[in-house]
Length: 114
Length: 115
Image 1 (cartoon, rainbow over the protein chains, first blue to last red):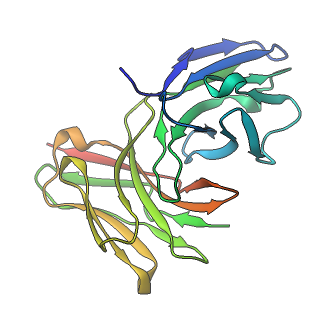
Image 2 (tube, rainbow over the protein chains, first blue to last red):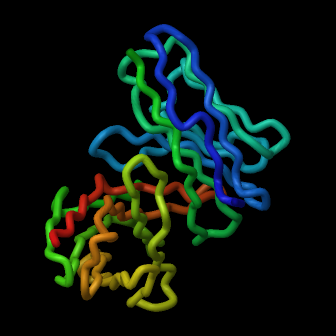
Image 3 (cartoon, rainbow over the protein chains, first blue to last red):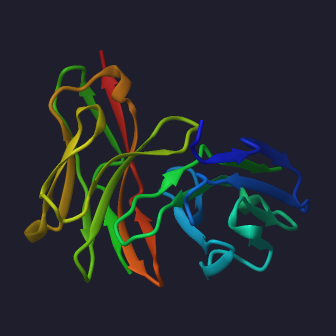
């Protein structure tokens, strides 16, 4: 399978703990996105990487959130000191360059903070 | 910034009936528009995309959408619903800036197909 892969698929954590998610994009895609989706809503943009450079971050991404994409390959999204409001589906997507290219999404990581 | 409005958070049709899911967008520039489908606990799968080549766009699984600039709409249709079409559908508009596409999604429409 050469699609976008995300791990883990599900994560339950206690409030205050740190969590880290991983995304492996489609290999030839230089663009990588993180989105967050809460119940009953569409995905909301969090951050974008072009190769290893993080070029844009949403104001939704508080200081407790950090994302990396070392060497322009896989990416990690870390949430420190989790809060119940962080409970959501975290979606990773990747795409080729160009102005009208679609994003290919992974299956997501569902985070539940208890 | 762009925005997307999907009218009707839930739509229910009978198997074999016409499917019509509505999407209106706002954009200050010619938009790139997309429809994605999401099955429970899954990621989003692209159904189709409009990129200004043709106003009627055909996608996978028999879906199509028509871009109407005067109505700022991009409604999704399928002539005959199948049980397997039951899912949540998201309309999205992309804004190209800073050398990447930022996608703005609607809040989704859940399609229920009755036997």
